[in-house]
Length: 183
Image: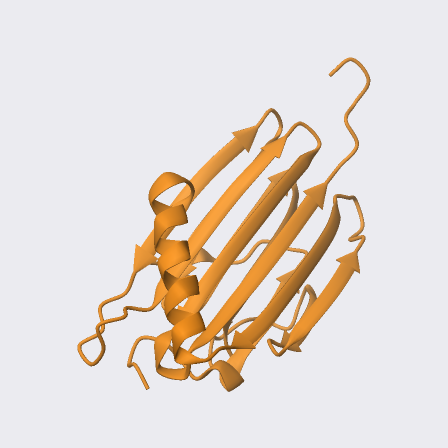
């Protein structure tokens, strides 16, 4: 096991309908994107990522991390183990519509190396790519996050690699809200 990455069996996916304190997280890289009246911030964690969506005082946080990450109970809309594949849709009070899917795949060595190389290539051209140091292996754990959108819709996608287990975690999250007349 790499000291940076947890075992994939310890991963969780959580969604909050409230603000969280950024100091709760050991964030290694961030990016902020604004679309008119909506703001999306993403952060890479050694164990996964966080996404914060804000619009008109309403906030949704998504955290993909390990189960040792200290998080409050208050305001938790969803909490689950990050295993195999899952889709969820939430309509937190006050909007936006939030949908997410995540998957965990364990690959053979050849397939893992191919996907890992594709993530590196994609990360050089778009989004935010972070490679974690690994003193044991040649293949470093990666996190690649991309945020795209337009007025009324933001889609954030991520890939996280776990070379010691040849595992890939993929998430796709959508935040959708009604555009106001005249926009």
